Image (cartoon, rainbow, N blue to C red):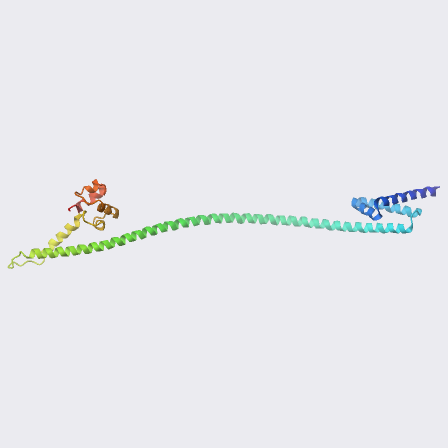
Length: 275
C-alpha cells in the first residue's frame, strides 16, 4: 500500500509536470519563462524540477528517453544561465566603463568650456582695446588731415601774398624810378649854367616822395592785395573795403561797418580818400 501511495504520489507529480508542460507548450518554453523571472528564482525552480524529475525517474512513471530529454533541457538551461551571467557581467563592466568615460568626457567638456570662456573674455578685452586704439588713430588721422588742409591753405595764401608783394615792389620801384627821373629832369632846367648844380641834390626829394606815397594809400584806388601788404589788413577786410567803394571821407569805413573802430584807428593815418 505504501508503494501504491508512493506510486500514486509519483504519478500525481508526473501528471502535474505533464500538465505544466502542456500549459507552457514545451520544456524549453518553461525554461525560458523561468529564466525571465530572475537568477535566484530560476535556481529554486530548477532545483524543484530536478527533484521532481528524480522522483518521477525513481517511481518509473516516465520513460528513460523523457528523463534524458529533461536532463538535456536542464543542462541547456544551466548553460544558458551561465551565458546570461557572463553577458550580465560583461554588460556591467561595459556600464562601468561607460560611466567612467562619461565622467572623463564631462571633465574634459568642462575644461574645454572654461578654456572657451577664457578665450572669449580675452578676445572681448582685446577687441575693446583694438576698437579704442582704432578710434584714437582715426581721430588722429582726422586731426592731421585738418591740419594738413589748414597748412596747405596757409601755404597758398602765403604764396599768393608773396606774388602780390613781388608785383607791388616791382610797381613801386618803377614808380620811384619814374618820379626820380621826372624830379631830376624838372629841377635841372631852371638852374643857371654858371652855378654848378650838385648831382646829389634831387635825391632827398625822391626819398621824401617815396615815404609820402607809401604812408598814404588811396583806399578808393588801391587793390585788396595792396591793402593787405601795406596796411596789414586781412584779406576779407580788404575785400570789404574794395566792395563798398567809393568813400568820400575816411570815417565812412566805420559808418558803413566796413572795418571795426579799432582797425580804423590803426590805419586812419596811412589812408586817404582822394578821388
